[in-house]
Structure formats: structure tokens, C-alpha cells
Image (cartoon, rainbow, N blue to C red; front, side, top):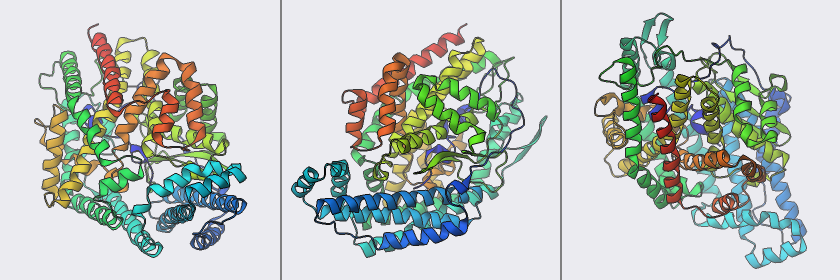
Length: 625
């Protein structure tokens, strides 16, 4: 399973590129020197040698796992329990290998073994699904009467029927797994290495020589407009210098995914991936169209921000490199990791005492559940959470950075994933039901981001600080809603364009990006460099067609944010149940139980726009003071 979250690759999206990276804002002092922390990997396995030996045995067990279910109900229950145990063991290996590979980009052995473990888990699920399909529904219902514990596997059985038309014969699936996963992994590594070797400019400042990519957040705050512009343009020039390589990697991914989809009897790759996430192409296309209908909300917000910066600074022609400039006589605070830990616990208080205590334990250095570095070095994969039965969940962050707001966002976002995993583990959720639609996972983590920014806004007294934090909240909402719509539209259009023979190179990708971003934002006509936006979307390489998850996550998170603000006590009861119970039913059923009613996709879009516009109006009122 790929890392998720624009953290797993960092959520630096189009809007943050335009408004500047989402910064940290707190009336706190400058960040103190950071300290590195490491997860205790011996909790997973005592040594790499022991892990390799055990993984080999697990692979053999997976390969020989029966694809025919026992006739006897008690034997069937034992069969499913055995599969659960094996899946849980494989998840433990996967977490361990992901941690090792992420600590060292050159550790291909760990990365390859992780990919093989992913494939083994997928094969096991396919095998168990095939076994369950050998049992008729009427027979299974009778078995449940004899062994009531089998009722818990009813959703697993229904899921096995759902994908039957796309199942390949075991031998063909093994070949596809053997070839496709390593090819995708190698292209991702090539992309990362290309980014690291791309010649990004260095700019001399009062703080020394800074890299326009690595230090983009800091450079975006520089009071010298010429420095900000040079940094902004230098970053794009760096990507442009390797555009042909980035395009070759991305188009190679697209062709590989399209071929894999057609082999599995899907009409195209988007349909295949959306299906795996309990979505369908028409739903996604409708959601993207609904967001485009509200594009003027984003443009109005950008005009508001530009006008405010112009009034505060006297800059007549405000551009992307200006809009993140702090208000005069307001210093952007930076938080150390310890300060972020404290702020996070206060910000997440609306989610309840139990949730906050779990977060406190996760971030307590004494518990060795954080893996956070001060320098990137050979570390990779941005940020993610890991979890496995019998081991406390963990949080990995590639490097904490300069202590700006985006660094704190990674902590609360990926920490939210870790807490979710921990709660499911404590509730003994079956490993069959610990993996659900990615967009639901992301919604829970995105809610934490919104609460972080809102807490800083609500607890500030200085109007400039309040405006700064409210801007951060709105930027996050607009990025998850509109930024995700832009990205989702772009990625789906790239796949369609490649298949149709209309997207063949970097120039075609530039043209497509410009056409989409121009519908949503005021900057593209003024700044042609934004055409290279596609080259920065690393998730299109790491986890193809994942980006649209953030749109659904943003819609759900925004709705939940509004709910918790209005009635935190009632929300806590529903939310804790939702997190602890896992994904034991279709998403629509889980959400119906959570909301107490059905909510259409269109209603979520409309509600989110109302919630967002209320915050934009509040910001406009602060600007008038």
C-alpha cells in the first residue's frame, strides 16, 4: 500500500504555490534547534535477518493458501481466522520495511521487499475472495446460524463478489504483480532522484544562500520583492529544465496503468482505480464538474487576498510571489517540534479527551513512536503513519523543516492517520476491515488540519495574527476543495489525452495544465510558468490517480469541521465510533450511520461552499479593521 496524503509527499499544492506554502502561525517565539527522533523498529522485528526469514515463510504460506473454502461452518471460521492472522503478519512486515526504506532512499532491498509484501497481501485477499465466492449466499447465511461469528465476514463476502468480473486467473495476476509493482516503484524512485538532481537556483539573502526549492517557504516571506520573485520563478525554471524527463516518467506511468486496467477488464485506468476506492468514474466526473461550477468562489478569494496585500504594501501589481507576504510589522512565528506538540493537543481538544490522550502518547518522545529528522539526508517518502497488530502506531516525517505552519500540518495530519490506526488496533478491528477507501482515511486527517488552523485563529488577539491564521484555514479548505478538483481534473484528463493520442510530451502537459488552472484561478494568464504545475504533482507518480481522494476528503472534512464546531459533544460520540469500528460496511452505510441521514455528493459540495464562504466573509471583515 502506497503512502497516502500529500504528505506522504507533502501537501504543497497549487494554491499554496500561489499563496505561498502554508505557513505556521502562532504568537510563539522562533523555533529552537530541532531534535531528531527515531521509532523503535525492534518492536516489529528484533533484527533484519529475523524479519527476512519470517517474511520468506509468510510468502510461502501465502502462495499455498487454499482458494477453496471448507464446507463445514466451523472449519470456514477457522479458515478466515487463519487468513486474518496471516494478513496481520504481512502488515507488520510492510510497516517495518516501509520504515527502513524511508530512512534510506538507497535501500532498494527494503523497498523491493515492501513491494513484494504489498503484492502478497493483495494475492491473499484475492485468494480469500475466490474462496468465499465458492459459497452461495444461502449457504453462507445457514453457516452464520451455526457459527454466529461468521456474520462479521458478511461484508468481506459481498466485497469478493463485487470485483469478480475483474479478477484475473491466479497465474496471470502473479505475472502482473511481478512486473507492474516493481516498474511503478522504479519510476517513483527515478522521479525522486530526478527532483533531487534538478538544478534549482540558489539566492543570496541576509540569511545566507538559500535553495529556491528546499527553502521556498522561507524565501516566500522575504521582504525584498525581487528576492521573492526570483525565488518563485527560479523554482519553476528548475522544473522546466528537466521537463522532458518528468514527462517521460509520468507518461510511462500512465501507459503502464492503462495497460494494467485493460488487462483487468476495465475501460481505462481511472475507472479501475476509482472502483478500488468505492467510487465510479461518473461520480468523480460529476464531482469535478460541480466544483468547477463554484470556481468563482476561489477567484474571488484570490482577488480579496491580492487587494489586501496591495493596500498593505503599496504593490500595485500583486502577483503569486507577493500574496503570502506577512502584514507590515507582523513576524511569521516558527514552532519547534515541541511547541507543535503542545499546540496540536490544544487544537484537537474538540475531538475529546480520549483522542487527545492518544495523540499525546504518540508524540511523547519517551514512547519512541515518532521518526522525525532535522535534515532530509537520504530519507524519503515525506510523511506517513505506520501500524500493525501488537505494535503501537507510529509517525514518520522525512524532516521537520523550518518550523513554518506546513511542518505542523504534517504532524497533525499524519498523526491523525496514526491515531486512527491505533484506535482500530485497540478495538481489535479485523485486518480485512482496517483498510478502507483512501478518501475516508484522508478526511479524518484533514479534519485535524482544519482544527489546528482554527485553534490558532480563535485564540489570537492581535487582528494581524487572527487574519494570518484565518488565511491559513481558508487556504487549507480551498486547497483541499479547489486544489484537489484542479489536480483530479488534470490527472484524469492526462489519462484520457494519452489514450486518445493528444498528450505526448511536456508541451502537451503544459497546455493541459494551463487550460484547467485558468478556469479556477486568476494567476495563470499573468504567470505562464504555472503551466509546469503537472511536474510538481509527485503523487501522480507515486500513487497514480490518488489525488482525487483529497476532493472527497476535503468535502467530508469540511462538513465534519462544521459539525464539531456546532456540537462537539455529540460529534465526539459519533466520531469515536466511526474511527474505532473500521471499514466493516460500504462507505455510504458508514456515513449514513455517522451523519444520521444520507448526504448526496452535490449537497456536500454546496454545504462546503457555504462553510468556506462564511470564513472568507469573516476574513474580509478583519481586513476592514
